Image (cartoon, rainbow, N blue to C red; front, side):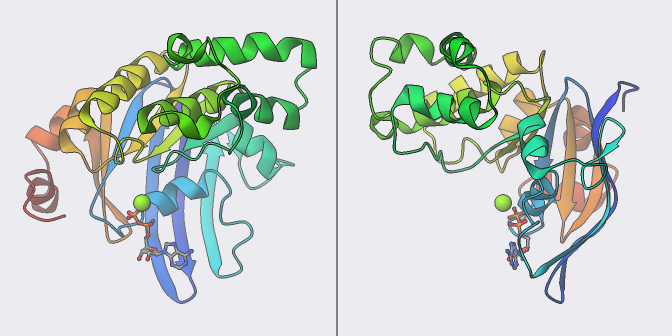
Length: 253
Ligand SMILES: Nc1ncnc2c1ncn2[C@@H]1O[C@H](COP(=O)(O)OP(=O)(O)O)[C@@H](O)[C@H]1O
Ligand SMILES: [Mg+2]
C-alpha cells in the first residue's frame, strides 16, 4: 500500500440491522486522490459501508452503528458535523441515475441553492460542473430540457455533475455503471479517471475488468468483513487469500 494521506477511513466499524450484523470489525482506509474499488458478492455490505460515510443510517431506527469514521482527522459523527455538511463534503452517486424530474440546469442548481451558494455564481458553477462531467457539449444548447429525457448514461453524468458542483472532497459511487451500456460505461470510467486529480473516489463495482481498469487499490468484502485490501494489481493477480482468489476468478459471486 502507499503512504499517501488517508482522506477517509473507518476503524472497528460494526453495524446491525435489528439483530443481524451486517458490518463486522471493518477497518478500511481510502488514500487521497486515489480510486478505491470495493468488490464482493451481493449482500456482503458494500452499500451499507458506503452509507456509513454519508450518515445515511441516521434516521433508520432499526440500524445500530459502532466505530470511528474519519474525514481527514474529523469524526463524521461528532464535533458538530451536520449530516448536510457531511453530504456536501462526501458526495454520493447511486446505481440508478436519479435526476430530479426537473430541467438539466435545475438538477445542478438545486444543491447550490440548498447550500446557499450566491445566485450570481451559480450559472458559472453549473457550466463548469457540466464540463467536468463531460456532459456540457451534449446539453449546452438546451439546459431547460427535462433531465428525464436524457439517456441513462447522460443522466448518470448529470448526477455526477450535481455532485461535483458542490466541490466535495470525496465521491462515493455505488455501482454507477451497472445500468449502463458499454459505451456509456467507458465514458463514465474515463470521467472517473479525470476526477481523480481533484477527488478521492470509492467505487463499488461487480465488474472485475472495471476495477482493474480504474482502481489504484481494491478492497474485497465477504459477509460483512474485509477479507483483503491492497494494490489492485496484487488483489487480482497475487491475492493473499483463497477466498479472494476464488472471487476475482469468478468462481462465485
Ligand atoms: N435498511 C436495511 N434494513 C435491513 N437490512 C438491510 C438494510 N439494508 C441492507 N440490509 C441487509 O444488509 C446486508 C448488506 O446489504 P448491502 O450493504 O446492500 O450489500 P451489498 O451492497 O454488498 O450488496 C444484506 O443482507 C441486506 O439485506
Ligand atoms: Mg449494494
